[in-house]
Image 1: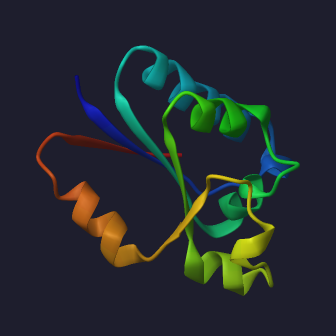
Image 2: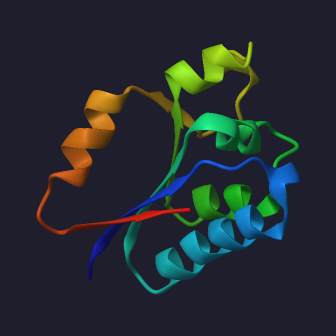
Length: 108
């Protein structure tokens, strides 16, 4: 099984594409893959508790939701406002994961 690092940069208001991308993450996790959904830029607002239900499902099924700390702060949001289970990360950790040979990176 492959590992996936899916990067979402659009907010939920950008249209249904961001929700479908999160649903893709759930489908990959259901197929047995290790999945990290990394939210950056406007995508970080999806990690608020009112965000897409697919994020809740991904976390429940053992996937990970990472949130870019810089993007979050730039939008005047804080880590304590995030969905339970979402984790604040910095770019060094994202880069390290992307450089792992088994990881497939996908950007939306």
